[in-house]
Length: 285
Image (cartoon, rainbow, N blue to C red; front, side, top):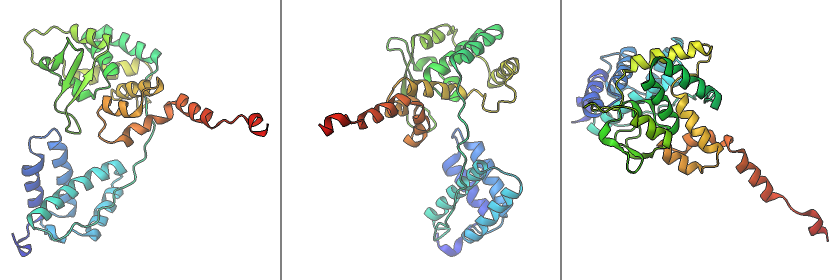
């Protein structure tokens, strides 16, 4: 297609949906972000007229609506995908520069041993299955969606591992199971079901909110199910597991994600300090 035969931003977004997002886990999220972009920038704006000036206006509009940096970056990511698709097909001749907003890292929340014990016990009151799910999340560090969608055919009790084929970074991985995680999975009755867990996401979220309220954690915005993954990561690092191993265990595609936990390994820092210590008396002798 020649450059003069350009299409609108909305049409380019629809093409990107069909070519890149359709059928993926993030299909609806990506499309909602893309739709917000072309609604704000203009449905009929030619995609080859999207430049730094229009992108700056988009960001200013999002900020005026009180959108946080992380939200703005998700919109910009969708726009970038649309423009890259357009560049590949010749609708645009260049990729405009898209400056992402700086996202604050914020506080990482993990559970203490005592908090975990309370959470498990409170879940046991209402759902033994959900309490097993919580234990498995803590001991595997799997993402909520990864464990929730786990199927029996991907559980290997002989080797005490589970195989994950569809992950956030698109790379299959094998996760070893602790004895407690094995017991949690074996506590589930197959019963001909494809998936291991039989509750719905809504049911778990509702139960979590109840536990959170009973523990007096309603004001703790980081006290969410994802904190169980942070709990696993923090324990691995605190117990001396190399960060590269932690990265592989958790399925982080980028080591920088794992490095957020580096400060939790004080023993490693102490060893580094000790390596710099010099026997001054020996040197002066």
